Amino acid sequence: MRRHRFAASVLAAVGALLAGTLSATSAGAAPSPSPAPPASFAPQQAAEGFWTAERMRGATPLDLVHVTPGSFRAPVPAGTGTVIGPTSFPQAGGPWTGGGAVVKTSGRVFFTFQGRTASCSGNSVTSQNGSTVMTAGHCVKYQGSWHTNWVFVPGYNNGQAPYGQWNATKTLATDQWAASEDINYDVGAAVVAPRDGRTLAQAVGAQGLKFNGGYNKAMYAFGFPAADPYDGSKLIHCSGNSSKDFLFSQDHSLGCNMTGGSSGGPWFESFDESTGTGLQVSVNSFGYRFLPNRMFGPYFGPEAKAVHDKAQAS
Figure 1 (cartoon, rainbow, N blue to C red):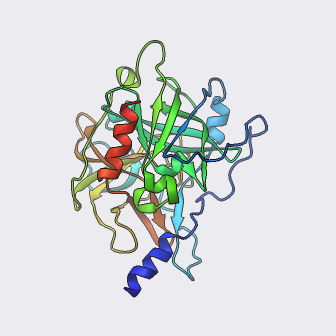
Figure 2 (figure 1 turned 180 degrees about the vertical axis):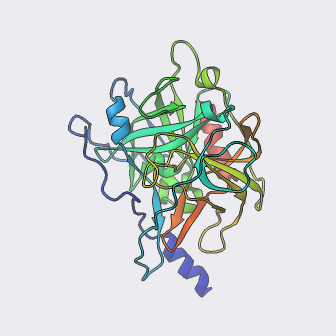
């Protein structure tokens, strides 16, 4: 019982940004976020023209670090990673050079958070509307407010958007994240508007999903970390045998040195390196300050499925 109470107190700790203070660049013209609606979704207005290459490069990574009481050690910067080709397993973190579908379906997410520019990662997934992106809950809502100017940039490459910028019409999160930002349910989604008469899935493809798949699986995690030693310019991946968090959450755990900005990037089970396809079962969510080089991602249970169902029906 005591352990459970202690764990609850840790999970209630306020998340900190790995990169510190958010960038104030380009914030002057950005509108102040409106109060959070009493629902697990928020309507979005078009951000057409807002996200220039300069703004995208300058967006500060938004990620969570959870600490235990009395722990003051800052995150330890990870190594520089190793450029690799396919068939590398496990991998603690390095640029993905294998090609395949994941290069197009995964991308960076950009938004305005409390009047300042910030970034995460996301992934195009199969859906009825062909326009659904899965990401982390804190990549759509954080500290009580829903982000604005939300766009998805699949295949992001150092400020360039080879497949265009996809503006969100609606962003969603699990009921648990929307109500209390419960780290166990840090799952979000976005519905994006078509471009040039095509849906997102028609333009870049979409990855399958799997819910209630269990723990202790071989996993591949992808994202666009933008905090040192990474700079957000390219797609990074980790791979290895995952486990269940034995500390303070019900999340998956994976050895991985990705840093701020990777939040919301997809975790795949049954990933085929030759085609770059798999079944998405989680997203990059958070790390513990006292446990560097380890990433945690929420379990895709019925709560995550409900978010996907709401998004694809929009």
